[in-house]
Image: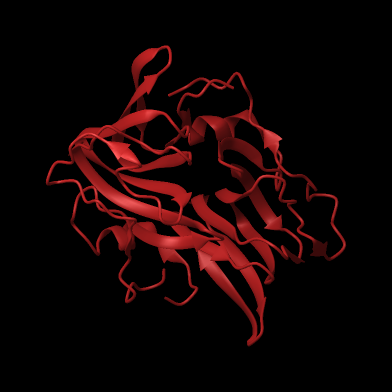
Length: 136
Length: 136
């Protein structure tokens, strides 16, 4: 795709699939991905990378299994959070959300280890956003 | 700082300085930085890294000196753009903007090579955001 600005709200109109990230930009060997989410993802862990979340719309919850126990963090629209590498986590969004993620290219949506993946979760390293996307 | 979500609009209230990024999260060896900007930055180039911009509020322009000539890209609120490594660029925001950036920790605001730095541009690798920031 040409190197022009991308309006995220436009990019979000180009797909409907849930839990199926689209890559909107690449920064060195990292991807910037956006996704629509609703309901539950799956418990999983990235052994070798942190994973950054920014909530563009709606509200995201992330369950975390930490050495001190299990907790859930809540990210309203406009909030950011980084899940540290090695921390088992499960995003969920009962009322839906649009999110932006930053992580190394090639990072799988379900991590290196995970619970059984339900049908509604896309196992992917991210799809290309529609190349025909108009610039803002 | 504790690993809790950060509301970006709250983080933006903790400082007034322009062109002086605050680090709100770290992802592996990358920083997530936010900044308030208004007026002109300085022509500069990062020789070894791309630089990602997301406009949180207002409108950002980025002048680019590319092999094919000079152009300016415009990023309204909610738009993203990555300046490729080695491309001389100058952000400017006549009416002000709040922006989020991803780049490797240690990346200088004025790059590896730059024009004379005006007094209003902070030469920094980013400041820590206020550790007392309330979580959302």
